[in-house]
Length: 345
Image 1 (cartoon, rainbow, N blue to C red):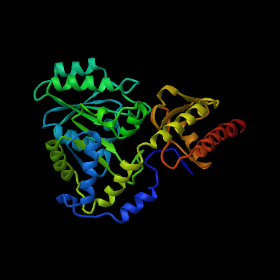
Image 2: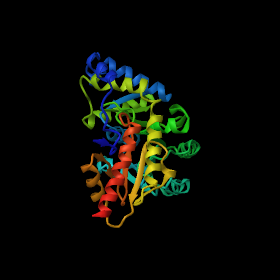
Image 3: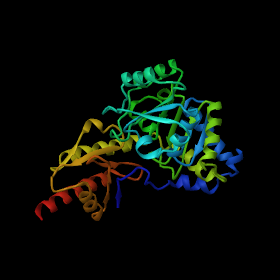
Image 4: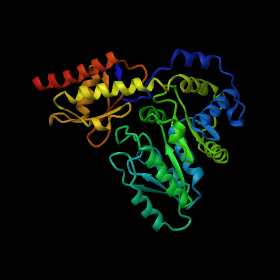
């Protein structure tokens, strides 16, 4: 089975498995796990921040950061196409007395500065506490936000006494694509979330990163959300390997995604916006009127290819560790076969 449905479907490397087997362990709830402590220091240093906190998931990391930024009664601004709003929050922030205010997301993943300014101009006390942006932007196809845009937005929200949170689930993909270091991308961000279990190929886990005082608040929220873990070094150990060994190879995923997208663009019945294929994500449509998303997904799966429904009549394919150039060739062959066989039926 060629798994292009999600870059979380990867097998840990032999080095990761070995690291798990020999990891030094302790109770992370009491800050006693040496492997977790090592990973947190490494993650903070990579992003040029003071501290980091290991989280079970990116969903929990984002939520804990928002909760830590926002006193009850305050507002968090988020994109209306953000993963946080569409997939993650599920009303939990509202239950903590926080208002989640969506802003229209542009096709390039940005939130217009004019819209941000408008929200601040009409906000009432206690006001807007945090603006959340996403880079790369998942629902916009994995596009990378311009670095100057991030810094401009940060300067504005800081001038209004608010904070900037960056959902960087695939932050290192953005860094590899742009040629800009992760630390420079997040330079003006007050908090960051990045996943170790996506392109970096670790089995599980995400990191919340920021200032030391802020991260202590995040730890409190993590405990409140049920995220404290005991011998969490078995999660941290492959995360260390991911940061040491799996960043530079992300370019291979990007190359495979571009090759896949260009091949799909030549297949009658498929439509791909090549301009959005910037990292390891390919968003596409099946344009033949006889095919709905579900029919195409099921036909491809039957032939050994997994892709996923991606809302609004779109499908998504994601390249990742373990997907080779040969797999891309086979995936394109399967897609052609699905359309050709059904055309002849």
